[in-house]
Image (cartoon, rainbow, N blue to C red; front, side):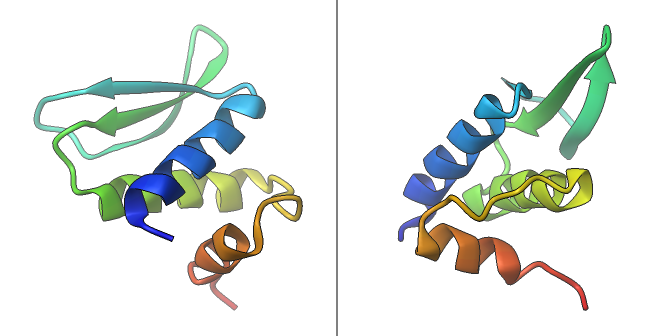
Length: 84
């Protein structure tokens, strides 16, 4: 699966988990935070797609979301980041 499609699928999954995704530009890396009691992922629009994907996957793993219902290709991509 191409990175752009992975990004769409994973961001859609995160939005279903009630996490807002905010894209911006500037001198920041991005990541997960809480703003006014709402979970948010801030993403630098200028970051490479692979970096944006890494941010999304790290949130999925750190928050312990059940991603078992996602497509096999997406699950395999996420599991590449699991540290054992």
